[in-house]
Length: 469
Image (cartoon, rainbow, N blue to C red; front, side, top):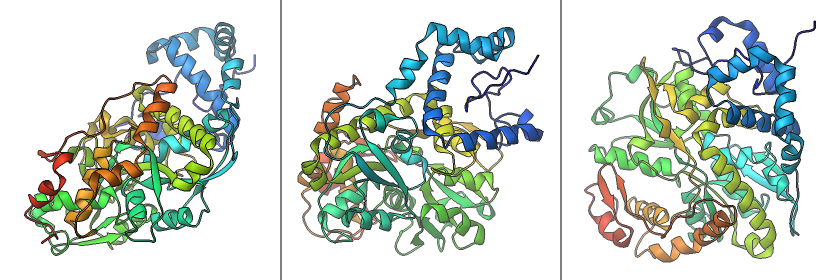
């Protein structure tokens, strides 16, 4: 009798598939440590993941299997008892998989521009924007999207200004700076959604394991991905709260995220506050350790955003709405912890992050090796709340003023509301049946200090270390 083959990318019908990370943090299970066959299967899965239609189908089957048998032990018992082919036939008989899979390819609405170019940086922050492509969420909205992997944030900015990209993955401070003409010519940009909250870390070279106190960091060279980034502002905040002047006691260098690990390995930098998966990749490569998660600095902070120019919104209102719905649908899927392993599988291949799936899964599930000999469990290490709160923009603007990126009076509320599309986000969330939050301005606590968006200037002036006079 021929062997039954589980052909799905998630190995939905493999009764022996593992569910836990191994002790070293580099493999999907302890068995996989020495399992050459597993590496072959992973390579095959990565190759097949390039096929967007097959991937969409596999996600549906995996989701149904998990819904029917929530516990891994139940799934294993069922598959061992009936085999792959019988399991697939039984599930297909109970659920209209063909119809569900076809839904991922449906088109709706008359849109002005179907063929779109969207820029992204290969980091986990972009998960909703990325996964909407292979999972068919753009196609369902009638869009033909080309995701353009881009080398760095300055190039993202320039391609948006030059209209080479229709929409883009941004660092959340970038559309604010671009709209104000800070660091570039002024072009009015809009933030549709926050792509991710949390999901960053300060990673140091392993040679600094004895320097866990930031007061020992004087003279360090530290990298951030861009000046107008939450990474820069959070690093500056963290250093200053520990008595280190970020402009005088250390060097902060702009380094594209894909180059951070290589620069850490070469000794060009002592550490970085950067996006994942590069913090975890430094641990995986045994050249760095995670000093602190950004969640521990400000739990719920925004990081990246999805946006476009104001001109694009005005000229293509139906296309804009379709994009909004696609990305919000992806964000809702990414938010559910039960889907994180699937999301890691979807975004890890070469066309997207080009990272070991295990590294990405550790980031997204929050169960990870920290490089100091520990395996930690922090479920909120990364999250995907899409709401673009106006108060988030006010905090960013307060830090731009604190560190001298903008001078004089700042119209915090006016700028925030011109750039962030909070009202639209709530509208489309409601349309999709997603929970819609109230309000626009929230208070936050960053390292124990409260930020009230109604008192931004007082907040700026309350700091001992700043560049304002």
